[in-house]
Length: 238
Image 1 (cartoon, rainbow, N blue to C red):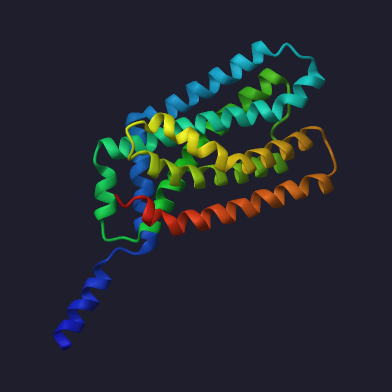
Image 2: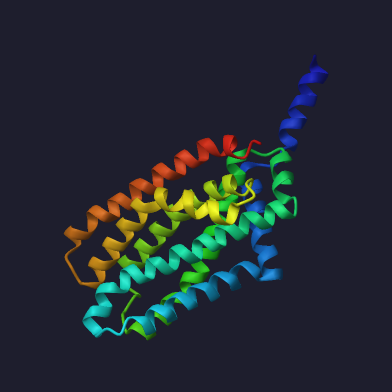
């Protein structure tokens, strides 16, 4: 009996801690991307193309550009983010890494949060490059603390849902087409709230008009992260 208890305790203590497992998954994705640079380069090129197309297609004056900046900005982030989410999970599936992660003796929620944090890091890197270029082309000051906070909140919610749905879509043969079909209807509240809040900030409106959209973003982020953490285990089961 004592031997069984000792063996069980050794098994429990030999399991990696939750934070260590999460950190290992994040570091694995970041290190793999630093070696290949496939994901970031594709996201960045796509984002730049969208910005340039809108810049030359919309021959607007300064006031009109300020009015459409929020929409163009979030269209760029959404399309580039979808490309990154799809590519991130496709690489895991094609190389067999996803099956290895699911077989590892770690909590499935650690896998979800690890992938989510890594995807969020990629999206924030692209946004950090896009924002100054967008500011120069459109002559709009995007480096406002409240606007940057809204971009962060919108990105967190987008990646939280996108990581879950990308894990589901990667199992299908039509994953490249399936992910946008599943993702955009679900993240529509996040995108609408982010666009509205960003537009009001760029229009220099009062914070009393902006706070409701910020509260919506925070609420949606918390709800989507909680739901994704709960259902991730069932999504990845084949």
